[in-house]
Length: 254
Image (cartoon, rainbow, N blue to C red; front, side, top):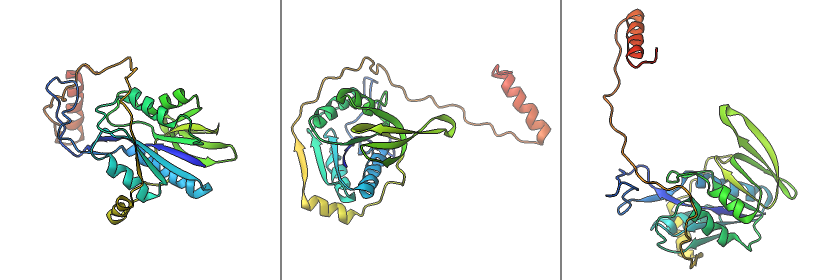
């Protein structure tokens, strides 16, 4: 089975995030980037499918961050067979522009399965996988937490609210939005990543950033206002209960 995995770099959540002067986006000049965690699960699921039934795994990533090369070489070190960097210094791409970029790169290919993270921390709508499927005219299932490849199809487990899951048989080729792989994303040693870098194999594809077709845009972002903090309620059960009711009444809840 030939599998394509769509990877994206997102701002590192451990860094202190600040807004730009216009208040419309993060100040990205000094941000570090890491692989989107859901895309990491998509890569792991692809590698597990490859181990189950054989085939190849090809990873794609837009070159809109300095860390993209590291992300792609890490994927190769984990077991991907090929890595393709789409453009370089493309600037900020929303979900619609990312999907157009991926769909163009995938068109004409013979991939049986396209895996993508179900969402990303810097997206407005979390629709990359859905949009790619629509652009390629392929069936699509989102919030996938497990797969079982079959003959010409794949059985996927989709998660709903309250822990409810359902299994679907999906004809191939198809696009899946992965929420969680069957196993935690594998660790790869730094030495193995360096070996992948020394071996090369990263294919750079010259592309231009596509125009976004999104109908919604961010007009303002704000840092949440800091509250007064929690009130620690002391005393016995009766006193604590009376204080809770008093707080609820003051808030207009009861």
